[in-house]
Amino acid sequence: AAIAVAFSLGCLGTIPAIRYFCAYAAIAVAFDFMFQITFFVAILVIDERRSLSQSKTNEVIKSDDNDYEKCVSPTAVSPESNSQDNSNENNLKSRKQQTEEFAEKYVNAITSKPGITVIFLMYFGLVAWSGWALTNLTEDFDVSTVVPDDSYTREYFTESQKVGLFWDSYIPYRVYFKGSRDISDPQVQADAAELLTDLSENTKRSEGPVSWWMDSFLDWSSNQTEYQSYITSAGYFDGTSTVDAQTAFEGAVSKFLSTSPYDRYSTSVVLRDDGSVRASRATLYHFKVKTAEDKIVAMNAAYEKCEDSTLGINNAVPYTNPYVFITQFSVIYQETILNLCLSFVAVAIISMPILQSFRALFVVLVCVAAIDVDLLGLIWGWGLDLNSLSMLSLVMAIGLVVDYIAHIVHYFMVHSDIVDPKARMVAALAEVGGAVAIGGLTTFVGVLPLSLASSFVYRLFFKLFLSIVTLGLFHGLVVAPLFMILIFPNSVTTTKESSWWWRKFVIFRTLSFLNFLSP
Image 1: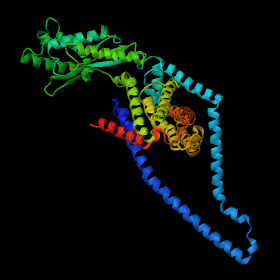
Image 2 (image 1 turned 90 degrees about the vertical axis):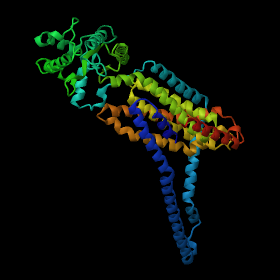
Image 3 (image 1 turned 90 degrees about the horizontal axis):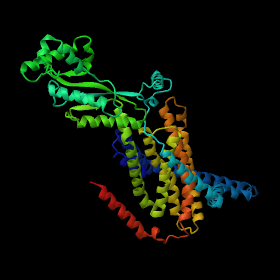
């Protein structure tokens, strides 16, 4: 339930890819949860009934055989035959005893002075290192990572990056002139020319030549006898003063775009059916954009120049395909923090009525927060960047690791009748510790084939899932048990946090909070 709610809250983000993933994951987890508590449980009950029925049948057959042997030869039945009837039960007791003995030795090891010292050094050392790594973490997205290793496109990207031809040294971008301002108006032409000059000469990371069809068009039309009379003293084409001027402008544009070598501008101008210009564009370049921060500065500077111009952002819009990724860079930190905070809220809302203890909830949230900090540090350690792919892994991490931790904490709270906290943790680990360990190992085995994938994206997911499973098991089976033992003194079920009125209070407050959030 906590995973489904966490993914549902992830849909509140602004990045569409994250919203789509969270919506799909929330629905999938919700269906999985419903199947587990209905279909899966029913199958288990049916299988257990079948097993009991088969066991009773075997007992009847065995009893008949023993009666027959007694009738034929009373001395044939040895005293040892009675012990064989309970062999399965003894084996189960033996395995349970071995599990409890191992859990007891394990708890004694992690609560010893050397054990506590090592665990705290590992826990706080990893958090401290990850915090330092966060200061070096950068936001970026290399499109070549989504291409298989043996692809020719990957080879092109690699060679282009070596010579700085792929978004590192420069990025071409375009300014689209559209909207209510008619480009046939000489004033609009002057405003557009002023904006392009400002972008190419006075804008950060946007220096260089301007390729604009209007410059070539004005030079061409000023040399055409039939259009020279429409050229103003400032050098612009007056296509709005009279009907003839408008007709002349439309005819001049059509003729210009069909004349070599100016026909190369045919893709830069969109004409209406009546021949008037619907929209057009000019090409400029962002230079010195090595890092994601440089790209963000360049994009924002271009937007600000267009917005502050006399044309306005609605009539002059800068755009290029890399802006899709650069926009993601500009919001990825905020989106990451938002999604992590929303996930913490989901974990707290779902876990509190079940754990019924603020201290237990504190342990869960501290462990989950430490895992997320460690994962962010490991992203830098793996040589990766913070982008939508790594952010998806962080969102999934909360859903995965909360299971490792919450199960141990919950079963510790269930055994509240045990006074000694160590014995309480032994009972919890003996009951659910093996299942948590198997869950983590099977998750690792499930993603292991991704390490052999030919695409970097799948290998990236393997690295992050390996980190998630390792950190989840470490915090779930090592850190959380130690914290629970340390912060819970010897107590019985009559404590405030376990009393019935406290449970009702927590449930009431949780439902009130959910009602407050609902529209």
